[in-house]
Length: 337
Ligand SMILES: NC(=O)c1ccc[n+]([C@@H]2O[C@H](COP(=O)([O-])OP(=O)(O)OC[C@H]3O[C@@H](n4cnc5c(N)ncnc54)[C@H](O)[C@@H]3O)[C@@H](O)[C@H]2O)c1
Image (cartoon, rainbow, N blue to C red; front, side, top):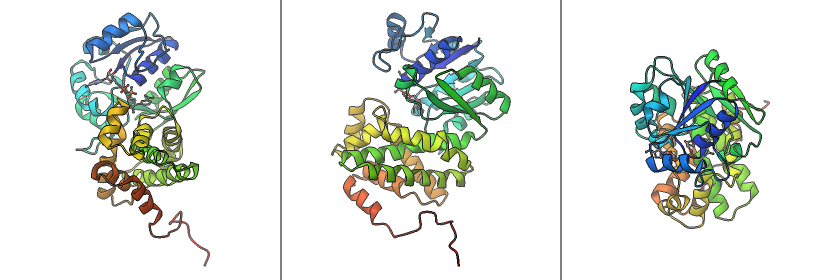
């Protein structure tokens, strides 16, 4: 049994806290929001974020960051990505040398273009930072439906330790040394999910969705490999796997926001209606800047940016994607002479 601190009590933090409790660990959940803490302590359920999933009596819930961190064998950082750096900064004084922090959020900082593990390392240099990612909607993990994820860590020892902590009969965990590839796949798929939602909102069909998923992962992999990520991460659970679930699922807030935009709402209206942080909106800007910096072609990312931030008509954006110059599917494949 391990002592685990989970920082962030949204959908994902709550689902993982129940998973780790079910695995026999002593879990303490921290939230910045005093009202949320009080509500969880009283109701033992997050009705707004994860309805129907009961929190075990053994689980502690606190508003004290110190209590959430001190004495814990490892920490899970589950706050939405726009709050990751600020939360890490506040955590730093309580984190001991070599303490493991598993980041489970997905995003790229728009100003620095850094992934979340790099931001955490900057704010908490003494931590051993790992990541958990893959096709895993909280709603389904909460209902104990079979799910697979990947733990990325710097050392195999940390990866194996975390794998043994998270794995269960309904939550299969693989390990990988490719932290960067895992993080880029997880963040950039949200931008493609916005595009898939836009296509749905426009009334386009399954062919369009399949095209966006397949050409989307091609863009993500092109950039990710150029940045140093490994191709296997983009063709695996944390790449195409997560992209498929995000583009297809009714649970995806990015797809939902895209759908509303496709139906004619502005980006602001869509985000307000979804009532949750739509991380793809942040990652879209970052992805465009990364594509420019690394000189990689990302036509879908470009069009998503134009729709979100320049008010471009979504139908016009899809039309322009279809009218691009004709080319090979895989430019690198040689032809027989
Ligand atoms: N929900 C999922 O199914 C899922 C699955 C895999 C990964 N993720 C990732 O996990 C991260 C969290 O997602 P979520 O669905 O739990 O989000 P969420 O919107 O449900 O999280 C909201 C929670 O974040 C915390 N919070 C709010 N404002 C904060 C602040 N200023 N500082 C610190 N904490 C604050 C509060 O506990 C709040 O309940 C995201 O990066 C998401 O991409 C989510």
